[in-house]
Length: 151
Image (cartoon, rainbow, N blue to C red; front, side, top):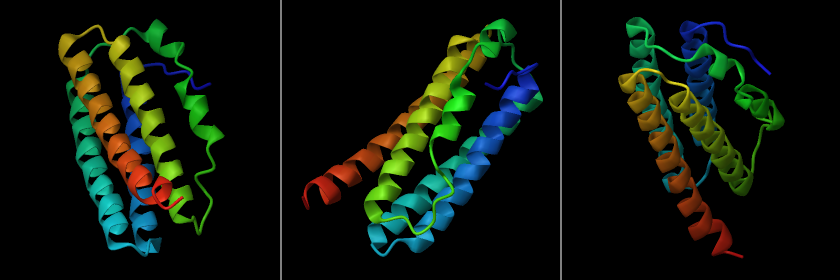
């Protein structure tokens, strides 16, 4: 479990996570044969770029969080349970991995919102959580239409 000492470390963790996901989705887009899936993954990478910039702005402002609450977050460890290094993913594996990523990030931002002592900070993290939920929904719809439908 990662222990955060201050707000900057939390935001840096979230920014690093977004940067890793930008790379993940960009590389994944290049390996997909279906144009709609390429576009979906590229679109998610662009949305994550915007989210990363939003997090950078939060770091500059320096909102308040309950650090005792943050130290109890167990979310950082759950990212390691997913093998994000696997290459040559099938279409189905790519969608499942992407859905798991979005779920983990949703939980992270939801937990950070719960630990926020500042209303603006809380609203920002809730907004980020909602953005992750929308991305997961897009992936679930893709999975439902093209994986489950084919089976």
